[in-house]
Length: 118
Length: 114
View 1 (cartoon, rainbow over the protein chains, first blue to last red):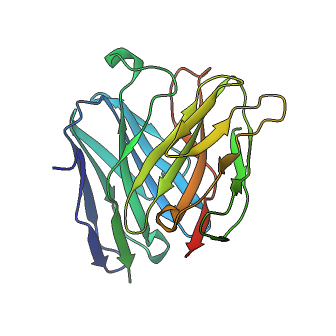
View 2 (view 1 turned 90 degrees about the vertical axis):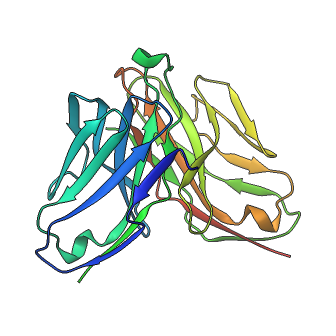
């Protein structure tokens, strides 16, 4: 089984709808991240969480919210989806210093969710 | 702020050709540097990394050396294969700030033909 899973893998929704993307991990990592990937723009950080009680905005958090329900689960919500949120969304995890990791720790990515907002 | 610049693609090569993908960075502090690879339809996976100046990361025949004086981390491979066709991302993580969010370049697509 994959260590980092994302559901759904594909989603089509309409403008104005609220949707949630979910991420689960079995790696035992404390840190989790949400990125979006757009052609020609690379990956941009939306939100990140270093433990269950810690939530931080990334560079493009407007229009998004997150919830860290447990150490292993980190969900991303689009409160009112708009077409320019059409993108490929990735969840990632890493093991921070507090958990025994090291500076420059590797991030492990899920397979992605392809979202289309009509 | 931090930034990563990598050469635009696509880079098109024949099998067994030599590969270089350039990457330069701007960062405050002492970043760790990474190359991630994304195969078609998949998420990103770490290819190699270097955490301090002059370190060389290597994996699967790919190499990159952390050059602080030129703020570069160029990816090289001596003989590419068709299976190396993918998108390659250079990234940095700023150590000084005590946490490790990644700043990515825009990615370089590599296409290798038989």
